[in-house]
Every structure is written in C-alpha cells, then in structure tokens.
Length: 455
Image (cartoon, rainbow, N blue to C red; front, side, top):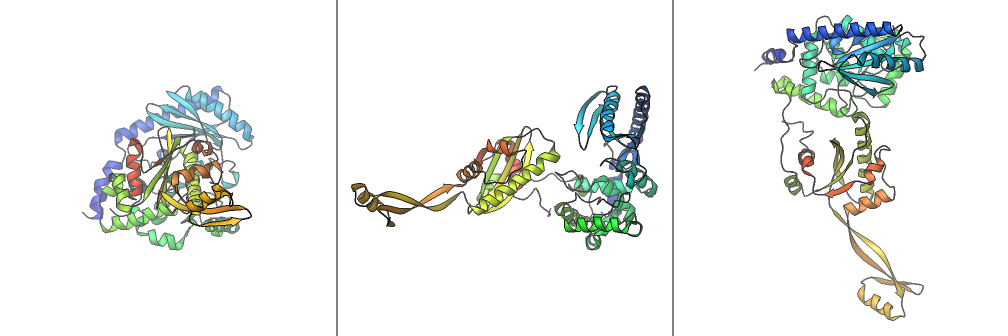
C-alpha cells in the first residue's frame, strides 16, 4: 500500500465525526455560559478562554479533554490569583458532575462533565511574552499563534499526533519525554505537512535550531541565551517558542523519544502501514526463559508507592535506579540495564545484573599464636600470618547481590530520590523472581522489547 492510500485509510479513524464535533461544541458553549455566570456572581474581572487541541481543532477522535483558562488582569497579585482562581474554579466545578483539586505551579480544579475531563486553570490575561508571570500563562498565546498560522492544516496535525501516539513518543510529561501537542503543531506549520515533518527528521537534528517566531532577528540576545542554555543541556532539538524567546518548546523531549521517532519515520516512509498510527501490542514471553538465554540475573525491589503524581514519582524512581547502578558497580557487579514503574499501589525498580554472587576475601583475626586455639586456627586456615602476638588469615566468602543491596541501603551508600527513599528502605528484594503482575514487565525489560526499534 502506498503512503497516500495509508493516509486515506487512517484519516477517517482519527478525524472527529460530525456528531462528536456537535457534542464538543455544545459542551464548550455550556461551560462558557456557566463560567461567565459564575464570574458575574462572584463579582470578578476574569475572562474565560478555551485553550488546547479542542480550541484549535487539532484534537483526535475520542479525545475530548477541555482546558478552560480563567484569565485574571495583570495587576492581580499572585497570591490573590491563586486564592480567587481556586474559589472560582471550585464554584464552576460545583455545577458540573464531580471535581478534585490538582496541583501544578499553583492549584487548579480538575472536573468531569458529561463524561469529559475539564481542567479549570487560573492564569493571567497576557498579551505578549513580557506579560508572562506563571508557566500556564503562555497557553493563551500558544492558542492564538496556532490559530493564526495553521491555515487549514488541522488534518496534518492530527496525522502527526496520531503517529506519535502510535509509536509511543507523544506527550511532554516527564515520564514520557516525548513530543507535546503544541510541538507537533509547530512542526506541521514549519514544514507544511505530516509527511514533510517525517522527511525532515535528519535535517531537524542537523539544523538543531527551529525559530518559527523569527526571534533571532527580533530579540537576538534573549533568543541566544535560550539557545546556549539548551545546547549546554544537550537537547536533541531547540524550538524557540514562537510566543516567547526564553523558552524551548522541545525542552522535555529526550534523545530516546526522538530516536524512536527518527527510526519509525524512516520505516514508515519506506514501508507505509496503518500499524504505525495505532501501535502494535508488544510481544509477551517468559522472563525466566530470557534469564536462561542471557545467563544474567534479575533483582527487583518492590515497595509501596508514595502518593505522588507520575510526573514526580517516575523521575524519583529513575534517580534511585541510577543510584543502585553506580553503587553496585562500585561493589563489583555490572548492571546491564534497569527499569522502573508503578503497578497500582506498588512501585518497582528492576536491575539486570551479570551475576548473583561475588567472591570476596575477608581478613579473619585469630587468637594468640602460642595458645591451643592458635594451633587450631593455624591448622584450619590456608594463608596465615602474625601481627604482634595474634594470628590472622584470609577467608574467601560468597556474597549475594541482595545482601549487598541491603547493606548499601543500611549504610546510606545509594543516591535515591528523596520522596521514595523511605519506601525503598522497606522494599521487598526479589532475586530472579517477580510477582505475577510484573511478569510481563520483566519480560519486556529483559528482552528489551519495551524499547525495541525493530519490528
């Protein structure tokens, strides 16, 4: 099947239907009316703005999350914005089906209405990058810029977003470190189409810097500070935010996620298939067979997960896994790879090691040489010497990797994430065995199927 035929087959599956559009538009009108009424009742000077993919019409079929931003005047003190923004969000949410408080730079309200997730986020009513006071303020400017520049290429954005989702490279969250929706929109605007973005995977890496807002001419010093900072951090791409020269839109994009995109883009252009857009189920297998095949060993630390959002928990687990890797290598074990995650209430760190035991020589102090016990010590040990009056000998011992880990934890010799340290101290340490719910995760990790670039 050629590439155009694949695209023709994929588009109807990812494009919102007319019924969906009518539902979404009706929902947004209802929410806007509710917001305006509630703002009036509370006597606030606040403007409601819809932002995100629904507001830009770049959303995928079945993806109806709504972002309603509540924009306060610039002269509002930050503490007042936080307090009154939360009050306003809760007052609106009380008219919806359910809600809970969520926390980012400042608290906001996460609600549900007619089966759809609705985020009610206080922000400042910014007109340009110089007005930006909090991280969320730019969203209004992002929305405006995309609407002004997309020029009817909404379907191209949908194709790129769905492709990135299908290859598991979509989402700028810290536990994904992939492409954000806004970055996907910028790339389509920059290169003109989904296929042109894919064809430019090599060029993007070589060029490194993408400046759709032309900031290098308009705000050279500010833009260059951003470029130098991001180059020092070794980012795969530097995409200067077209609405703010101080920000790299691709700051959260990891080399690994870009690498997946790089290979999958080439594979799709060589052998187009709808499977790229909807993902393949990862092959499953027996993790014990993988251990036998490789002759390696699996250490798993399983423990109760602290009450943290994924954005915080996963980096803490990763930091801890790197800490175990370094500490075990100092102790003579090679760590061939690691994996972290959460399954329900439990978190885990998996470490693949080259062996389960190490031989160590210990110095064994003995009795005084001229005693009966001294003669007994002399006869029982191979390598014996005297220091002062006492005998000493070498003793070869075998130490199990799990015992080494326990000792390292007890002696605080492992760098761990501060929010998971106490949980890890109470971890269950499993050797060449995992509970049933982690069997597939262990197989995907040991076989590298979890990250495999080849089909």
